[in-house]
Amino acid sequence: MAGRTKFQKAMARTIGSNGARTAEAIRQAGVKLIYKHGYEAMSLRQLAAEVGLQSGSLYKYFENKQNLLFDIVRDHMEDLLGKAEADLAGITDPLARLKTFSAFHLRYHMTRMAHVFIANMEIRSLEDEHRAVVVALRRRYEGLLEEILRQGAEDGVFQVSEPKVATYAIISMLTGICMWYRPGGRLSQDELVEIYTGLVVDGATGPGPATAARAKPLEAVAAQPRDSGTRAKPRAARPKTARA
Amino acid sequence: MAGRTKFQKAMARTIGSNGARTAEAIRQAGVKLIYKHGYEAMSLRQLAAEVGLQSGSLYKYFENKQNLLFDIVRDHMEDLLGKAEADLAGITDPLARLKTFSAFHLRYHMTRMAHVFIANMEIRSLEDEHRAVVVALRRRYEGLLEEILRQGAEDGVFQVSEPKVATYAIISMLTGICMWYRPGGRLSQDELVEIYTGLVVDGATGPGPATAARAKPLEAVAAQPRDSGTRAKPRAARPKTARA
Image (cartoon, rainbow over all chains, first blue to last red; front, side, top):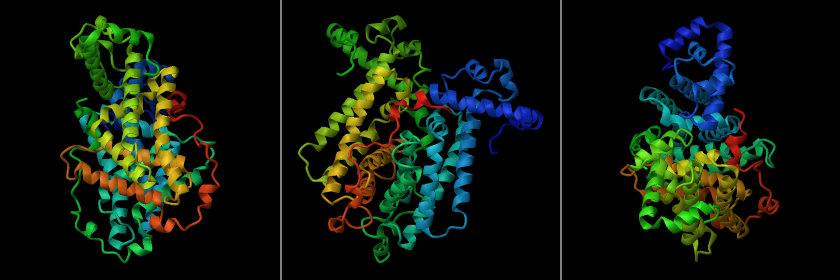
């Protein structure tokens, strides 16, 4: 609930269950319209019409358009993070954790295209304070995978010289599925999870079989500083700083 | 030049070199503004102000906002495709072609973030006729990688049971670099190319070394129909058909 405004907290106490349903309908309409037109282009008039309200009534549920966007993106990231942590709970083997993370990320992204699109593309439209909250949640999520890769490299199961870079690479690869996957295609969700997870595991275990890797020295891994990042700025800040 | 309107062809003949410079300035300003605000939210007034013109003068260079977007995205895709084909020319070994393609895609995407962002995100905003041109260009580009993976699998160098799926996965992974890469970070472009290309090659060559794979039967590859796609619809059609 980090970053929820006082206004929203007060609203949550006072608008009751009907109000909560309306707020949820507004959020869903917001996701649909932002996905289709972009955040800046979406008007509050469009949004109100979509849920059968007068524009003036929206303010009972959301302070303004910016807070609605923040609400959508933050809820998405909290949901993603919470469910990933739940799926990984109790699993200790790095290879099993890598497969679990990959399968979770794929299944989640196959069913939530619009949310994912908005969370990635409209970071540019979040105000600084809101963006910081979302970037922190994203870092925690990326941190789950990075830690799996580090642990596997330390155990000698993975050959990953740059866990942070590999984390970005793997997450981009898996997230990409929501750019083309449609239910009812030739391959089932299970088959796609198997194919993608295979690519991730083969990439992480390196050119030799995982068992052989155990015997190899991992100088490259050991030589890497643990906390040095490559990013000059958080990815979320990109569109604000871009000079096209 | 596919899809260029009669109007644009006529303009290209008549506006001359000063006009061409102005048209290019408008295109660059369009990239900047669409990247920052989204296509729908960009106004022609903003665009004209960005290049120091009156709104009314824009029409000397671009028929309308839609054609400007089409022009930007089509030129980007034609440039990407042409440069990839040039880099691959004369290379026949599938492994060398895979490394060349990966390195090309990474370097291109590290330096053209805004164009890539627009080409991926504003497909939703292209009219059907324009979208078809862009999707066809994208398919040709994806086809380069898919053919490399098929050839490598046939030669026994790669273990790729689904070249089309692997193509999407690899392109997503490589494209993702423009979401976080910034010049001047801890790792150089060369180092990043090496890390990402290693992940791609290891994913394509499978759990065993490439040389061992040659001896293995590739039933999974042989059993796949060559031309069956998984996509229900071209990815480009997504936002238009989305139900959020």
